[in-house]
Image (tube, rainbow, N blue to C red):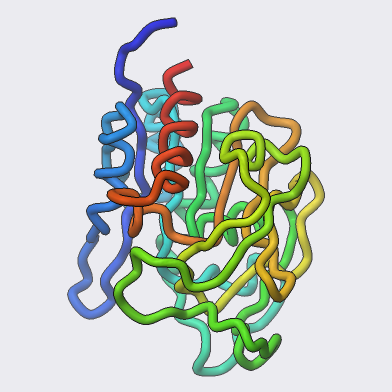
Length: 237
């Protein structure tokens, strides 16, 4: 097997106030530490450009950030609770479609798992506190490199095979989550209060996504490191 470093496209975050692209260093650092070359993708919905981008990348990481626009799953936004970025939605849904068709390894984090679910035909809770109250707090405060709640991995899931544990602690910083799991996706993990915390797409070589934030804990957490490593290894192949 070639040990050439794979190129990983990383979708950018958007700052509304500054009208600027930005990036959480942990996404890039986690990929680099696992032996990949991370590259921030442009915020464009030009299909030709995105087709070329998919050709150039060995894998793609879909990052956290803005809420997915509810119209993509047939709903109107809850007033004052949903913050969207239409340009990012347009780019990422097209990029996901093209990368999936090319069977490129795909990894989603936070918004990423939500986007994967919607792209496959599922729905989301627009706002957990108002739509699904729970004793489990899913929006933690700093520091983020610590466990906020427990998550249980499904028996037989690729993530459980990789991590070798049944339950473990995860960090958590989200107010939306999977509501109806999409056809074609398998739930790989659940939170203590029953939310889907990880998914895999059974018909593809590597389409994984998690609701927690390995990019904020990768320096010290072996579980986060294993997730980045599995993704980069899949892209290398």
